[in-house]
Image 1 (cartoon, rainbow, N blue to C red):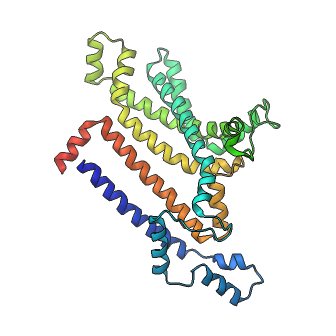
Image 2 (cartoon, rainbow, N blue to C red):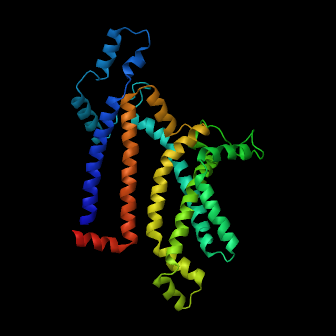
Image 3 (cartoon, rainbow, N blue to C red):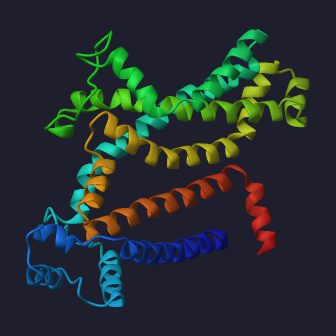
Amino acid sequence: MRYLIRRLVLFVAALFGLSLLVFVTLRILPGDVASVMAGTNATPARVAALRSQMGLDRSYPQQYADWLSGLMHGNMGVSAISGRSVSSQVGSHAAITMPLIVLSLIVALGVGVPLGCQAVLAANSRVRGVLHILAIVGGAVPALWGGLLLIMLFGRGVGLVGILPSQGFPDDGWRNPVAALASLILPAIATGLVAGAAIMRYTRACLISMEDSDAVAMAMACGMMRRQAMLGVGLRLSAAQLVSVAGLTFAQMVTGVMVVESLFNLPGLGAMLIGDVGNRDLVAVQSELFLLAAFFLLLGVLVDMLHHALDPRLGEQSEERG
């Protein structure tokens, strides 16, 4: 409990520092949303009136205090360009990006863990070598290039076997779940295969490190076959390390998916953020960046908690240091 409280206190302090960093960084960058909204032919008086209307003429401490107070009350502000609340804007775009990330992680784990185990346990040395090479090559292939290849192979209307949609998202969204899910399959595979190659390498390395361990040797001495001992004991003891790798992979997918979204023309968080940055929508961009960074911090805390749950020795060491 003491460890959990310490982690939560650090998490809140990191969120505060993060909000300050985002606010200051965006104020340093050039560009003015009032000038963008007023247009190129606007008079200085018109631009000044817009700045006053949006509160941009107030001091930076006042702007930061208002924004931080709104965040604490769940109010992320209103977009100066679209006129919508930032929270509803983020929610509508996250309904595309977050399922895509989850599907990509399922592909990554479904490919990486079994093939990583097979790269160590396969009886044929050639099979082990081929799988090792595939893991290295798969990690070197950019998701963007893999996505283009998938479109050429499976994209409807352009691919050799055109069975899946490769552009856009259904207008009725998740009210048509079959069409919505079909539009995410190719981008999820493009992102998941690259991440799966990394998980495959880590799984292979974890099992190799456990191959000569006392736990596996004891399991084999008790009558288990080598494969049973490696999967039932070695893989279970490596679960904490694999969870950490999966958490890092999940965090990396957030940025990777945003790149893939542009290739498949998906209106997700990436398209939203790029559009708001291009329009100099300061209120929307600072809240969106803060939410993304806070998501990374929260993911790190959750992975750390799960790591401690899987490996009680970490909790004991924390208590000794405390």
